[in-house]
Length: 290
Length: 156
Image (cartoon, rainbow over all chains, first blue to last red):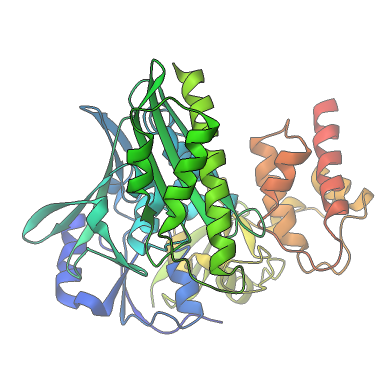
C-alpha cells in the first residue's frame, strides 16, 4: 500500500536529531535505511506521527578501529560493512553474517544500526551482536550511554533505547588470534528471514578451546545466547562428540515459536543441527586462521 | 511540499513531493517513467528495482525526498535511443521473460550486478537475482539471459 501520512524532518546533525526525539518521544520513528520501517509503514504496522530521517547524518557512517575494538557508525550501510577490510579482519563473524541479510538491493540501503535498533529476533545482526558482546552507544540531550548487548534486546522489536535517544555507534571487540567463525541459517529461500540462524565463534589455542560464543536467531522474541553450551566447550579439545554434546546443551532449554515456517520441535532440531555444523565449521575456520 | 531535484537517466528532473511519496511513485506519477513497475510495495518482489548512485535499490523502500541530489537510472535509461543494451539483447535472445511485469526489476538488478561483477558465475548470478520474484518463467530463462550477457561481455 501507499505510505500513510506523516510529518517529516531530516536533521543535519545528531544534535538536531536528538532535539527532535526529545520533543516527539515515541510519536517519532527514526528512519535509517528504511528497509524495515518503510514496509511497516506500508503495511500500517507502524503509524508514527513524525519520521526523523537520519540519512543526512554523515557523522554516523564509517568503520574505525581503536584499542582492539571496531566501532561501526549506526548509519553505516550493510554493503559498506560487507566491503570493509577492517570488518573482515577484526570482526569475521559479522563479515560472515552480512551476506545473509535480505538481498543485494536491501543491503544497498539497509544499515547496521537500523537492523540492531529494529531488533527483529529472526534477523542476523542481533544474534551476531549478542554473541560478540557488542556495545551500543546511544545519545540523548543528557549525553551518551553505553549499553551492553546482553541488555540491549528487551523483547520483540524492543530495545533498551529510550524514546529520546538515538543509536549512534555499535562497538565490536576485535577477534583474538586463532578465532574461527561460522554464520549459517535455514530459510525457505536465500534472503528470507531465518527459520533458525546461528552465529558461532570459537577461539582455539594449541589443542584447546579458549573462548566459545553461540547465539541463535529465530528461536524466541529476542536473540538467544547459548551460555551453558559455551561453558561446556571452553577448555576442551574440538571434536565431533564435544560439538554434539554442545548442541544438546544449547537446545535443551529452547522454547521456539510456532509459525507457518516451522513447529517448535522442528526449530529445536534445526537449531541442534546448526550448532553441530556451525561449531565444526568454526573450528575448521580457526585452524585456517592460526 | 518539499521541492527536489534528482538526476534521472542523466537529466536533472525536479518535482514537488509529499514526504510519504516513494521514489517509485515519483518516477511513475511525476516523471511519467512507467517502466519502473510497482508490485508488492513493501520491498519483497523486486519489480521496482532501480539503480541509485551505482547501487541496486528498491524504489518502493526509498522516499522520493531521499533521492534529492542522487543519480538514478531506470529501465528507460538503458535504451535511450530505442536500441537494446547488451544485457537486454541477451535476455531477448534467451526468451528470458513472459508477461513482462518483473522484467524492469530483474534487468536493473542484473545491470547493477554485472557492472560490478563482470566475471560472475551462475551461482553468483542466482544469488544476486534471488530478491526478484517472477511468477511466469521458473527463472531458468532469466539466469540463461544474464549468463549469456556475461559471456558476451567477456568476449568483448
